[in-house]
Image (cartoon, rainbow, N blue to C red):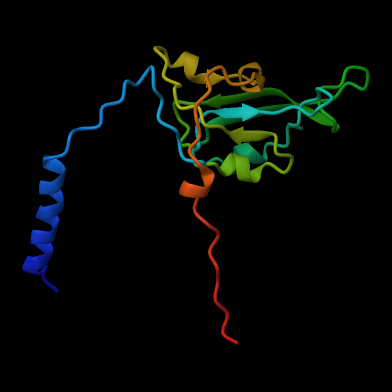
Length: 165
């Protein structure tokens, strides 16, 4: 099926309308545009309210990662000085952000909600070595606050499946 001439004129009409509008210029460092509610940015590891790490070193996030950017080395928990509530904890937890594709599979694979993808997007560095985030870096709260857009306006509603009855 070949495109109709009316469809081409309709497309040119959209282009011509935009040509005569003033451009939208935002002063980036001063004003940060709100990100969508489901935006996936910088990773973050979480702790329980009592201070113990939620990550138990199960390596399910590393197994689910398609780009193989997560490295987890588990160790046995010391009963006197516990790091996590389970028998093990993640002695080494590293994410190579230069390889990460921000798919969110690590977040979905974690049964303890230990890792989430936040809304920070300013993660550029001058060196590749600085893009390997260690466990201490991931446990820290975010430094920069990024505004989130109104969830009611931009969030995709859950689909309603019609059933034949």
